[in-house]
Length: 270
Length: 335
Image (cartoon, rainbow over all chains, first blue to last red; front, side, top):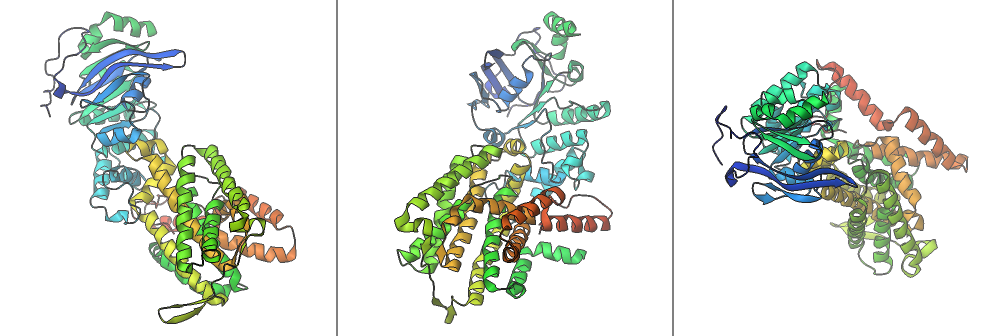
C-alpha cells in the first residue's frame, strides 16, 4: 500500500475544500453521494467523502447532525437510500454485516456490545477465531493454533490482561469499551470505525481511551464519530463536520477551527 | 471434590455413559429407563438450540414426530431393515429441519417461537391427515423389530433390558456428537450469538447461516430420539407431533438446567420419573407439573443440574485466589 504520511506532514491548505481527487491507492473508504431518509425525515443529503488510508479521522457535528447514521452506513449496519460505499475501490453497499467484517472493516458500537456472560478472554478469542473457523462443529476449538495466544496479546494491548478471566458483564464501563476495541482488532482490520468511543466515560477513562486510539491509528485507518469537538482536535489529521445531514466542512483541525460556518454551528449550540 | 469435578467436566460423555449403564437398576422398570434415555436425548437436542443459541422453538415435536413416523413407515410399509429405517427417520427430520429452520430463523424472539409453533402444527396436521401412511388418529402400529444378529451376537430386541442397551448405544453416539459440537469452534459461535447477535455479526460471523446450521443439528438429534422412540414403543402415536411434546422439551430443559450438558437429561429423568409416580396417585398429573414448573421458574431458574453446577463452581472458585471469577474461559467444558 501507500507509504504512511509522516506525522505532522503537510496538509492540503485550502480551508474547506474537500479532499477530492486523492490518488485511488490513497483512498481506503469512500462515500459517494450518500443520502438517507427515514420515512419523511431526510437524515443525510448527498454526502461524498474520501477517507485517506492510515489516517485518523473524526466525524463531528452537533446533535442530530446525522453522524451516527453516516457511521452506520459506512460500517454496513444500514444500506443507504441512495449512493454507495466503496472500500478499497470495491462497491460494498448493501453487503451483509459479516461481509464488512471479513473485508477488514471493524467497528465498536455507540452502545457497548460485548458477550456479557462470557469471560473477557473468551470474548476476544471468539473474535479471533473468526479468521480460523466458522462452521467447524466437530473438531475441538482448543486445537486452533495460536487463537488463544492472539486473544491474550490483544487483551494485553488494550490493558485488560489482568482481567481476562472476569465475566465481561462485570467489567467497568470503560473496560467493556476497551474489550470491544480488542474484539474489533481481532480480525486485524484495515479500517476501524468507532462510534463515540468515549461516550459515558469518566475523564480518566476518556484519556486512556484517547491514548489507545492514537496508538491504534499509527498502524491503521481509524474513523471516529465524536460529539465533543475538543477531544478530537488534538489527535485527528482530518475532520469532517456534518450539520443537518449535510457535509458542512472537511479539513485539518486548523482549517476547521478557522472555518466560520463551523464556529457558527458549534457556538450557536453553546 | 474439585478434582472430581474437573474429571467429570473433562470426560462428560464418559461420565454420563457410566451412569446410564447402571441407570436401569435405579428405575422401577426398564421401559421407564428407555423412555428417559429417549427423552433425555430429545431434550439435549433441543437444548442445543434453546440453551446454547438462545432460540426458543415451540415446534420441536415436528422433528421427534417426523423421526418416529419415517422410521415407522420405513419398517411397516417398506419393510426396510431397522438400521436403514433409523437413518431414513434421522435424515427426514434433518430435512424438515432445513425447511422449518430456513423459514423460522428470519424471525427473532417471540416471533421465532410462534413461527416454529405454527410450522410444527402444519406438520402435525399433514401426518394426521395422511391416514393411509400414518394411521391418522390411531397412530402407526406394527413397528416391530424382533431380533437381529450383530457381529455374531443374537440380540433379542423384545427383551427390555437388551433394548435399553441397544438404544443406549445410539444415545451415547449422539451425546458424543453434541459434546463435540459444544467444544468446537462452532460451539463458541452459537454461544456468541446467544450473548449478542449484533456483535457476532460485527465479528464476521454469518449469523443467519450459523442459526440454520444449529437448527438443523438440533432437529437431527431430536429426529434420532424420535426414531428410537418408534422402535421402543412399536407404535408411533400421533401425539409425537403434538405441540405439547414441544412444550415438554422446554420444561425438561428448564427443570434440569438449560445451557448445561447434563441438565436436559436430568430434567427429562426427573420429569418422566415424577410423571410415572404421580400418575399412579392422581389423575391430575398436569396440575402437579404446573406447580413444579412454577416453583422452578421462581426459585431455581437455573434448574436442578444448573444450580448444582453453579454451586460447585462457586466452591471451586473460592478455592483459588481469584474468587468469583468466571470459569467460562477457553478450555471451559461445562458439564
